Image 1 (cartoon, rainbow, N blue to C red):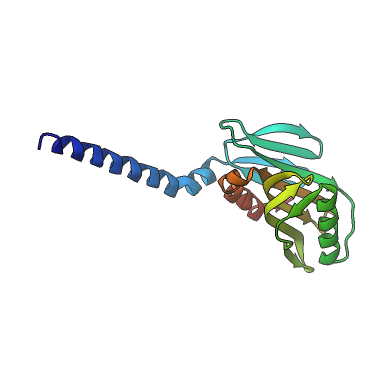
Image 2 (cartoon, one colour; image 1 turned 180 degrees about the vertical axis):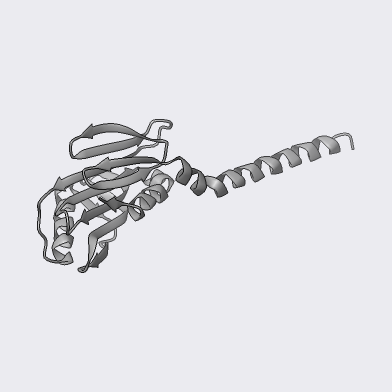
Length: 183
């Protein structure tokens, strides 16, 4: 009977901590939306979570990483071509396949999503999942190739992480893709 109050205190404390963790996770999207940082790469405007740190930058290139953790994760956003003219979405899909070959990336499942309406810009080709890079490196990869009919720009975006960390930053990268704005 003497340990009964101690047990209830420990149980109540654990339940309190779990409730707090659930509350933090539940509010995460709201916090990210309110604290996101705006970036621009040529005509491409996008927002990133506040914990994504710019690791490298050049005229046509931005690389982000997590400076606050040891996650094996990076995000690259690059304009790979300007003043290019494509006639239809299948040409973009072919460029996507060729770019994956050049990067020596082989997805486990040979499927990718084509978000193309020949009347609406931008055209987007996306793929995500586990993959092999350089015939040996296992990773989780989310890739998008974006083409703007109006500006004739071609952008390559990808989020790369170890297989085990694939679900950590993936949702934020997907949000970045969904909220892209071409100015």
